[in-house]
Length: 168
Image (cartoon, rainbow, N blue to C red; front, top):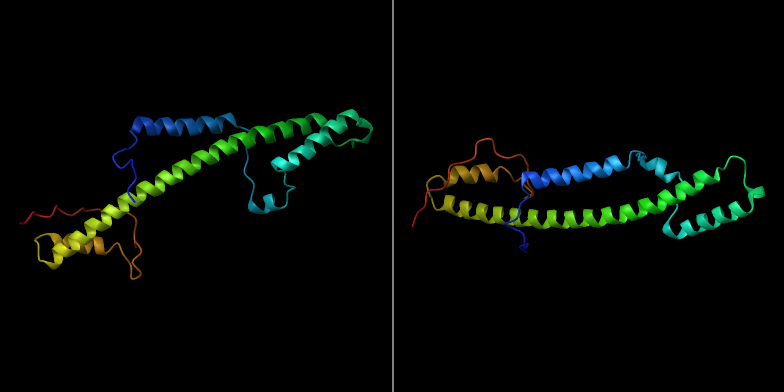
């Protein structure tokens, strides 16, 4: 599959703008914090559905303060619920953006890798045919694959080979 954006690339200015926007989102959420997997596992989970329970509990507690334990601050509970709803909206938008970027990344990566594999096969055939310069390129590229056919190294070559001389 060839994507429709093969000739598209971000300018440095556009990339800087994207990264600045991501930084702005981080700055807009100075209270955000990370939890470990085990910490998350040990917490009570609220979902969009159970948020209705929390909302009903909050409303009931406001109307019936005699049943509210002294250690529960209703204003903090209300703020937590509001922030949960707000962050849910943010997360939905971010997940959609991540899916879009991930799909584009996979598609363009596939385009680049497929074209490179075609080039490699052409160089391999040229090397077998004895085309001058092809063997060195073939050996360099061949070294990028291990026995299973997966790439052995992802770092770029430090000394790229000279172009193959054209032949008829």
